[in-house]
Length: 273
Ligand code: AMP
Image (cartoon, rainbow, N blue to C red):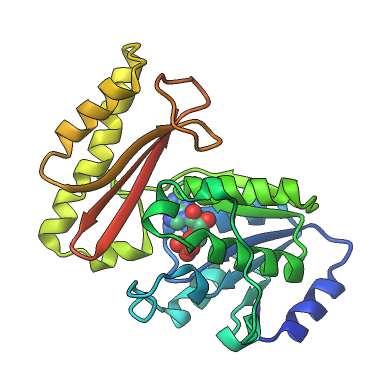
């Protein structure tokens, strides 16, 4: 496994693997089993696996946790080594961005849900993902369904800009008790950690209503609100795969999204129906 820090090193690595399939997993590090599942899938499906670890400043809003975001470089390297990653790309901020940068604007429809709560967040996400795609030139890139809106916007960008990359959506990995894994879970204290279980519980209650043939988004949202009554819920949304709100469940085309706050920590989870 090689650690690459500069654009030149990365481009040389890409050039030396020109005729091979490259699986790419972009991350912000503090790797957990969610990231590992993406890396394992990339390992199975490609000759070369590249993981990037870069806490991307342009996707954090002023006042968010950019400085506090967990950084665990040594542990991350060990995980990648065990997962037989070929290259880790770990650039400095100054390597990825010049001072005068023209921002990519995410489409207007990204200013709902996460984009409404964090205006500009997806501009930063698409900016860094496009830069990374141009550098790595992967055959396939792996993204978690946990960040459903991010996944959709990246799929749209790839389609609209004719990028020759296959986007591979990966299942959400959870703790045994149901909490979706996230690098931000470490911010939770013991009580918040217990309360956070209500998020997945609300999604399971939605799934059970749907299994009983309930179709109405309002009824399902009301049930979820009831389960999460004691939480500071920022939003519950029921959308189709284009992230448009829908009033009735459409099987195989529905995502139920939840965001709840625990102090300064926002936890996001979802269920694909
Ligand atoms: P991050 O490091 O948080 O930017 O996440 C990097 C990638 O890992 C993104 O594609 C996320 O959607 C994905 N990811 C994060 N948490 C999970 C999870 N619990 N299950 C599956 N994928 C995840």
